[in-house]
Image 1 (spheres, helix red, strand yellow):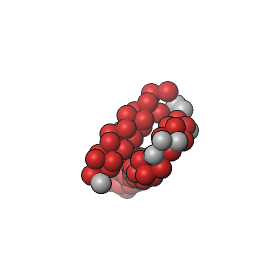
Image 2 (cartoon, helix red, strand yellow):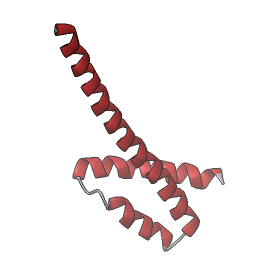
Image 3 (cartoon, rainbow, N blue to C red):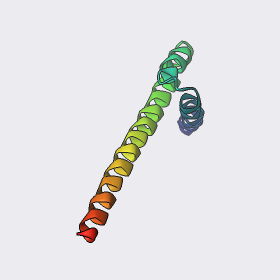
Length: 80
């Protein structure tokens, strides 16, 4: 159902922002537990959205780090 996915995605975006702001990397687990008490379907949609967002964030951090290393190596090679 599109409504559930839309709501879960919007909530996961807000939770990601709050996790970044507060440094609480387990907030999403407590939110999911709260949701699951009322709607297991919504809980699963929320957790799917969270997993995707967290994976993207991890991938972005890795990519940024690798790109920085490659740029540093390239700059050093040009100086030689």
